[in-house]
Length: 534
Image: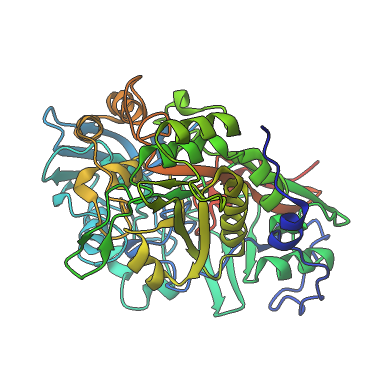
């Protein structure tokens, strides 16, 4: 039996903007975007409210722009040097020694040394921010161009910290740094008009490839306003929502970038009855049944969801890390198997005992809430679509809007529509290790599998990312067990969104790598490749 999303859902659940008003003229710029100058106007994401300080989290989802990192990932996601000229890891995996380039200057002309690296990591470790350096025992500037990190225990994913934390200057880092950053990256700060725009210029001291564009103006707009600005010829690049992607704009071309910016449903994995120390309920008797979770995973048609909710701009998701080096492609499965899902539920004892269309088992109805963030239209549409899709299966899912506070109070006892996706495999550990159950937003369903834990621990304590890959992949599926839908199915991953941009048809943005979760401005990661077409 083939399950198709009804037309009424497509009308009600898919957001559609029928018209857009013209935006106010972009402030602080005098050059028209069609002028072949070495400047660009970009409407590519929200304003970073907390500013541009890497020690408190700026740049962790993409290029920090103003700052450089010790290492970075290339277009194939391989690890390459940036500020570092090389690094070594001790036999026990605890000591990381990084050698720095000796030709790096900050934008104010001062040299970047090991003392700046030490200061950056010590400041980040004590910031109490999203930068997680709990594993760092100490960092030492051995000499002007050598830094030694000592970890409390071996952790292969420490390399991702070296990739994501931008280095700040010890001499120029103070309370106002986040609003007036100084760094060694490709661009330097010029002006920030809060709520309106940010202006940057090419950093003349930059050690890397000289940026083609000398001046960038970032204008802060919602996606519908960015689309209107593109219509009006006021921006060179505009990030737009899927519902506007098929409405062409003269002089602009649509660029759809694949991402690991995913959406998926977390399921409570244990029976109800327990509570956290704060009194929050834990467990759900329906989703604790693996037959329910597996039936949902194989019944739902991911491509239909993508077509209905995201106008076709996305790819089916089967994990939190599709396409990443640590992803196991064996987790790809055929979905839309509605009849198999029906048989699986029947075999597990789920039957419609009273003819009301909802399955029952031992007096328990196959129903639960699916909580989504209230101000996220795409998560709302996706939650409604999934509920509509699975209703004929006899599973009654009730989409419920909520704030982050509401979600925090329900995520251990009800299903939640979450979004994740990064360049760091530690995210996989945090979502599936039994050691992280109920820790912040990690492992909300209290998932636990001893064999998965063993693989995750082996991956984490490996001395290198290359050594760890086999264990990350086996944790997903080793042919017998794992945390993917092939195994325990603690999540139903649904879609990897494509990031959509209208780009001036005369502008080449090179080959961006697969995009992470939608924070920051990851599209600028390869900005050295950008240039006007010949």
